[in-house]
Length: 65
Image 1 (tube, rainbow, N blue to C red):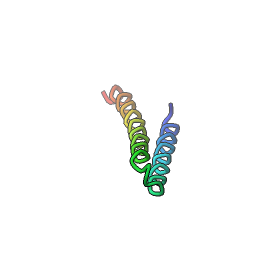
Image 2: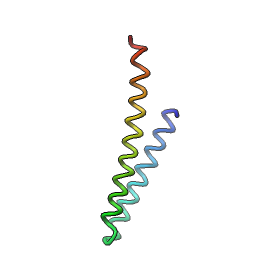
Image 3: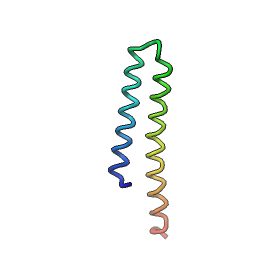
C-alpha cells in the first residue's frame, strides 16, 4: 500500500472516531459505548501510522548502511 492510501485510511478512521464522539454528545444513554468505539477507531488510525513509519524505517536502514 502506498503512503497516500495509508494517510487516506488514517483520515477516514479519525473522521469516523470524530462522528462517534459527536454522537456521544447527543446520546447520553449510549455515551460510554460510543466513546469506546471512537477510541477503537483512533487506535486503528495509530496502528496504521505506526506500521507505515516502521516499514519506511526498515526500508531505509539498509540504504543508509
